[in-house]
Length: 189
Image (cartoon, rainbow, N blue to C red; front, top):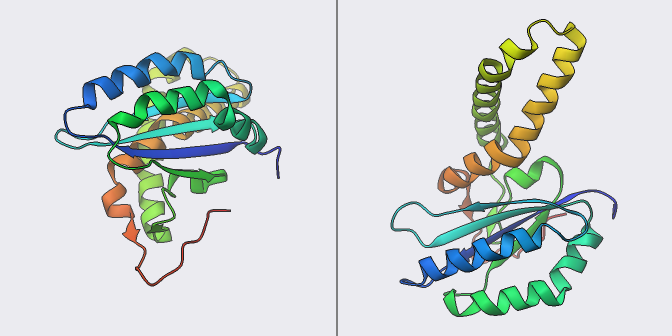
């Protein structure tokens, strides 16, 4: 459906020695990018020490607004600015729903359900534990129903926009399997 929110996952391999310039250009662009209609936030993921594969997770309120953003002169100018820093063309995948946490590109197979369950379980445990410690005392005298709604809202928001993108990024080598060369690519739904 065109009205459903969409998550865009972009991975870029930066040329050796261009990391600092790339990061500076991206940092300058983010405040401008979130002003676009329908933009619901961006999470930038830096590679581990010695790595050069950067990730970006963008959320838009609809596929149409993502396309408008993607085709905008401002975004095209940003892409032109970072192009010299990249080793190859970026990989871009648009996903909706929970699969947004686990689908990275058309070159990899989706992880098995048991792996997704383990990563999700770790994310839920971390999020509930930390938010329980941080928010629990402030909400202890709230009515149980208000406490339940507020805590679950916080858990879902933190899982969706912080914890799961970080967990799936850090565990991507364990989660992903390269698609066999003979297999055709399948675009995410």
